[in-house]
Length: 265
Image 1 (cartoon, one colour):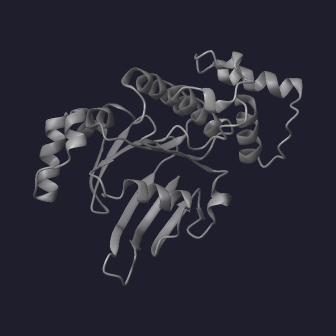
Image 2: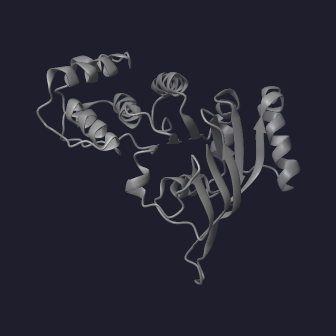
Image 3: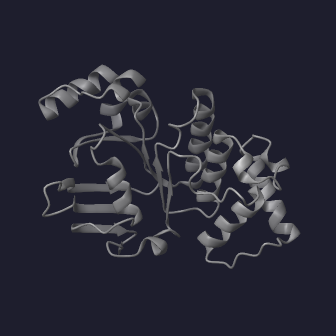
């Protein structure tokens, strides 16, 4: 279980450019829950992920994972339990290392093992089996430098690297936004399969309102660092995009003004 209690974060506090990015965020995620996160630019989505992953410390509030207060636990110590994937397929991998070396490095880091460039046959077979499950033919390219893969292939490998040792929490920060629609759909299917099979507590930022309502088990919407909508169960199941926009208008007293979100619909 992941619990966020009254999280507050201001960047540039005390300056003319101070930005109150998180404003009293309260959120509890049950084990295996898959939450989609939407909101306008600057609403606080990536900041929320940064707070959970430990990219920075919050000014106020608590972050509790499986009963342990990790509010001030350094990012590298959270990384064994909290995995994060970014929008850019170039992030999260070493382009000059082979596919096999990247996966081995992720496996060693997440499991607290030492990285050994010369892999035993059994370990190599395990990595090959995991890559084969992506259904992209990557199990036959284990000696290829990962920088030579396409964006979709690389993002799929990044997803595998993030989950090869099952994390307690998976943060997906618009991880398909930089991919073409066909490849993005494929990576989303892989994501759903991995999350469901391993029962991983997941939060996924997306700008696509329709996808936010159809994927996962719950949808939250941020606006100016606050959670303005928290939808699950029958309420979410019955909701369509116009209905969500109406709820937003009721909660915020204004129309949603975000071209990227509206055009994606």
